[in-house]
Length: 216
Image 1 (cartoon, rainbow, N blue to C red):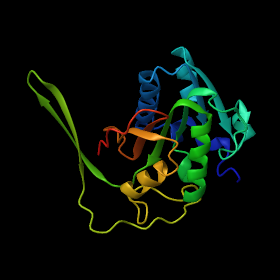
Image 2: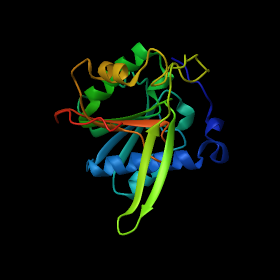
Image 3: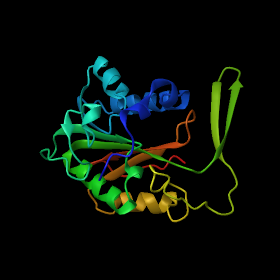
Image 4: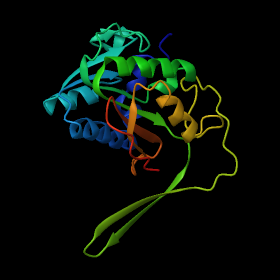
């Protein structure tokens, strides 16, 4: 495997747009909700997750194939060369789609091996949605994501970065979810699309908790 972009790809004004900031909030919120104290982040990009998480008292180490990003561990996601159950949680946000699908499943197994309790990932979900926000007296804000009608799923072509995306033809959500769970090493706690950035679908996996929810 080779890196697809150089570190200039993460230039602040071009990369950290408002939807991505919102996604970063959800990344941090999920890790904090799980009370993870040690985290391995795969694919640190510009490093904002680690910088903020450490201000929250969470110890974060990073791993990436590209030494220019100055990760704590220069390694392939399919062969991290770290001990089993090394971290409370292992995270890979918008990473696995940069690998062919079968390779991405191998990588997920490697994340599960290194995780002690949880694996958290996000993946691009191409299914378009309408966003509605209502303010109800005495009840506050109500936020709703509605799927747009789609007769035929679009075909995904490799664009130099993404090999596949959820809800493109052959990568329907149900099929991708089943594939992610096929090894039996992880159980799905929940999956959701943030209201602020519905292109990023989150999956929270547990090494032991029962599967409970698919949040749309």
